[in-house]
Length: 181
Ligand SMILES: CC(C)(COP(=O)(O)OP(=O)(O)OC[C@H]1O[C@@H](n2cnc3c(N)ncnc32)[C@H](O)[C@@H]1OP(=O)(O)O)[C@@H](O)C(=O)NCCC(=O)NCCS
Image (cartoon, rainbow, N blue to C red; front, side, top):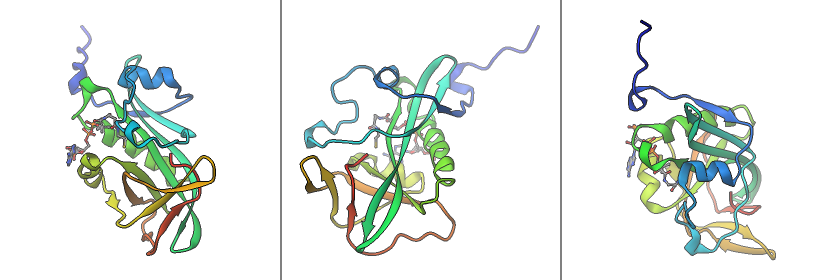
């Protein structure tokens, strides 16, 4: 008899690049709720991500992280960051390292894209989780664009992580030159 497969909770699941990530894939992970990321109260308009990474358990998609290159000014100097967003893990498989796995895979790809830092926005209760994954909070006001040429203060926490060994986040005010992702 062939050896039996370990049960799902014990099997290490690997991240893969996803060919697409639509509402259907999001709902496969988080269900069809109105506000899966808990950010609707802020009324912000977000950009979709361009590159998608996921974890599959058999045929089922159970985790996602997305990437998007974004223009930004830090201390008045124009540069680019890789925005990370749409991080999601299915409720029944949380707490098993799948966010670590899928964000890690996304950052491995981000390291090949050029910009020296990745940046994300998150609710305050998730700061500890991302710190554990090597991110740090940017203190001070972060400005982002919104439709109608509006520039608003980001109400969520802004966090960054270096993508290259010698990268250090520059000092000065941060202004995203796009919608947030
Ligand atoms: C946030 C979310 C993605 C986390 O997924 P998860 O698979 O449970 O996370 P992980 O198990 O990979 O946890 C990553 C690490 O953070 C740690 N961690 C989790 N919560 C933590 C907290 N509040 N403080 C500090 N560390 C925390 C874990 O112990 C783990 O560390 P380890 O790998 O060293 O053991 C998941 O809860 C989710 O999909 N939430 C709904 C959507 C959402 O809000 N997404 C975030 C958008 S920014």
